[in-house]
Each structure stands twice: as C-alpha cells, then as structure tokens.
Image 1 (cartoon, rainbow, N blue to C red):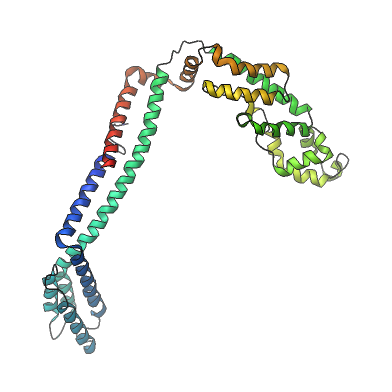
Image 2: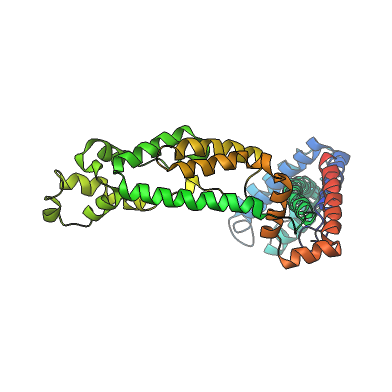
Length: 374
C-alpha cells in the first residue's frame, strides 16, 4: 500500500482539496455576475433557443409567412424585454440583428445560435457551479470511504505488529492441551447423548441452552419441536427418527401412530437434526480473551452438566480457571501469532515493512481527517 495513495495515483485528500477549490472558483464566478442576473440570462437563453428550434422549419425560405412574422415579433419582444444591464445582453441583440431580414435561411438560424454563445457561456457558470459541487460531494464520499479503509488497515497492521512481538517459543501447549481435551470430550459426550437419548431429552437440553447465549444451540423449528414434545415418537432417538423418515408410508405405519405427521414435521427438517452437533459447546483455537473464556466456560459448565459425564463438566470447569493458572495473555498472543502469521508476514515484520506501512497509513489518515475537517 502506498501511504498517500488510495487508487493508483489518486490521493483522496488532494482530490477533496482540489474539488473544494473548484467550488470556490465556480461560486466566485457566479457571484461576479450575480445569481439572479445569471438566472435571468438562463431564462432568456432558453426562450431564445426554444424560438429558434420551434420556428426554424417554418420561418425559413418561402415557407409559412405567418410563422415568419410571428417568429420575428416574438424574438424582438424577447430582446426588448431584457434588462439593459443583463449580462451578455448584446449577444441577444446581435442574434436579433441577424434575424431582422425580409427572408431567413437555415444558415441565418445557425448564425443566430452562434451569436448567442456569450449568453450560453454565462449560463454555463451556473451549471459549472452545480457540477463542481457534485464533484466535491463525490470527493468527500471517496475520502470518507478511504478513511474507513485506512482505519481497517491500521487496525490490521497494529494487530500484525502486536502478533510479531509475541514469543513464538512460548509453551502454548499449556493452553492447547486443556482446550483440545475439553473439545474432544464434549464432542464425544454429545455424540453419545444424541445417539442414545430420546429426541425429547435432546431437545430439553437444546432449549435449556437458550438461557446461556455463549453456549446456546440453534433453536429447533417450531413444528419439529412441537412434534418431538407431543407425539409418542419423540421418545425415540434422533437417529431412529431419521431412519423412520426414510420409510414408506405403509412401512412407517407399523412404527408410529401418525406417519403423515412424522413426514411433515421430521423429514422436512432432516438437515437441522443431522447438523445438531456439539459445535456450540466447543472452544475455538486460538482461544478467546481471558474474560470471555471465563464467562463462556461458566455457561459451558451449566449446559454440559445436563447431559455429559462428570469428567466433561470438570474439563469445562478447568477452562474457567485456566486464565488464572497460566500466563494466559502471553500464551494466547503466541498461539494467535503461530496461527495467523504466515512466512511472508513474518518476513515483512522482520524487515520493518509493517512498521513503515503503519506510519504511512497513519500519516495519510491525518491528512484525510484534516481535509475532511476543512
């Protein structure tokens, strides 16, 4: 990343300053002539060009004489009605002089349009001001977006630098071993529980977990929950219900009282039942911050105690006390550094490239903030 560049050679801060300068110049040009007077020129110019467009085909050559007279009178009336100090008034008079003939041709209309060019130039000052203001707003949006991107970039580089300061030789197994032991134990316990317990018992645990947001299972679909809790088939295990869902209606009638209910409530939610695994109860690696782990482990203890053997609950309790038993912050930084830093990033850190990019990004952020404040 180039420090002061966002896209190619574009500098959003410089672009914003240039756009603001253009707006100031465009506004000054309008103020030099007066807003109301330029509005009057625009109105007169539109009326003049409208007359030229409407009558050119009828008032030229030996065409409609009535239209010819009507056109000349309308144009004269327009010019005579203009204020004497109207900017570019002489352009309208020049056009009127060109059209003051006994017979008009297409080239006369073209010459009249060219004579109105000074008026068009005055009218353009209003359009140029509006365009400059639009460019300024676009430049401001680009600068704000670049500022957001820079903020993300700086956060990434600061994190990279922090990870680069981690002791890569620290004994992270003091964290990994308890986490992996717990994860393996809770996954095995849940697999056994889901296989052997009734679907109704499993759903009781799932619903009870809702009281613990950091250890909660995904809520079952209402119609599936209603079937499992009210129909006799809910006393069967989840694998058995999934097996029933594959039976034909005639075969299924030998196993459940209402085959149609099982098909509409269970078969349609096969994916939920199949994916109901222990993932909400496992701990990621690298593990979360110490405070988060303590809180989450406390909730894991409450949920696992409802279905898992004592050794699994004890493993969850161990996680809750783990931040107090080891140099948790330092070991976690090492774990994250080992997990997240690839060879290229480590090389950039060693060469000082990350620090250099961070300084450039911060400097560009300061320029952008100053430009936006301006």
